[in-house]
Image (cartoon, rainbow, N blue to C red; front, side, top):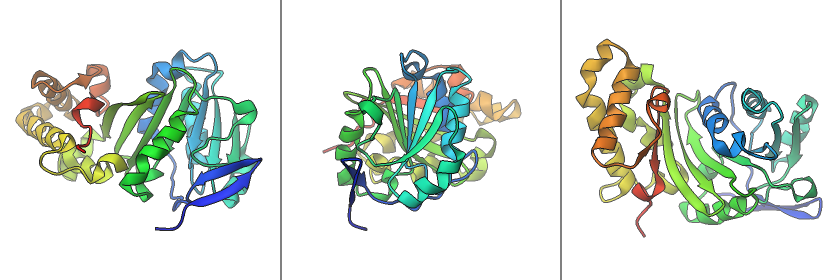
Length: 273
């Protein structure tokens, strides 16, 4: 593991490490959709969003802006990268509502602005599990009251994704988001085990909540296989409803489940000490 990268930028220390920087068009669409639907953005007095660690290209920040503006036309996005070369490469693509700057988990913004939303996608995946809590705490400390931090990972083309949602006080929920049309080909809902956030990816073992969750979700998906004759969406809605009926603290309803998105309260998957 490379050492922590600390460099002074505009009087601040940039906190973090340079990541691999892999990115792609439309890769983070599932997270974008979750952000656009979330009250933290829709009700924000200042709909400022940070795309932290956007990578070697500007695409994810631009797509996030476009999707956010469908529900908040006044939304604006700041892409933050710790690698100065990536900031220079993105700079020509800045436009009204979209800027880029150098920084890390400390989230450096003009006039110490506090974002309504921070997204850190595929960033902590390259860190040790023991480093997650400190990174979360630093990013959470920068949120506006009622703000949202999304931290998670996804597959290279975005068909499989998961993230933790946090507010200024701590983690609130875990979401898995899946491309339902290819789910059987991928091996069922538990394929997301390979793309769990760093806080959970090593906890998919017996005795841990996330392991029990994925086993039960697979079981519900298999139980409702006959509904595939109608559509994978109907099958996943039935699986999510079955999971909720089995006592899991499933949030949301069919309008989210039809998207292949399932959210459970963080208490259900909190890692054991």
